[in-house]
Length: 151
Image (cartoon, rainbow, N blue to C red; front, side, top):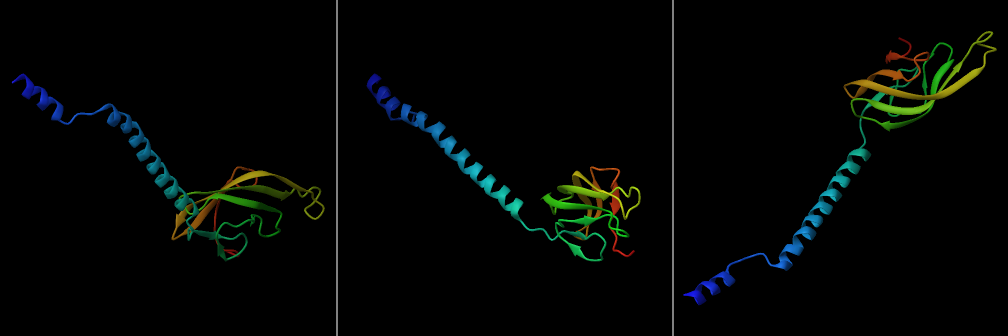
């Protein structure tokens, strides 16, 4: 009977040293595949084109990711230029660029143009259109409701 129980023990499935060594490699393979799938998903979301638009400064036209936005429509003495949008189509769109304004000293015709780096954001997305615009320069633009010009 001792011989029978010994044969039975050898015939039952058990993890051998080789199988135990394969487990970490199998887990590593699964993690690599998952990382690749997540990277692909993230890339496809980042490159997806959005239908979101916003009113272009001093107009009644809509566009996506404007590179320039005029703030002072009456005299064009303040604007955002060289806007590079890092986010577009989500709840809030963000851009960095340059704020430019005329200091109007001694008057606007003889004034000097000033500039500084600025962050701009558009939000309040309604019907695929951003309806609000703000900037990191509160003296130039804190918050503006985007309306067609002339209003």
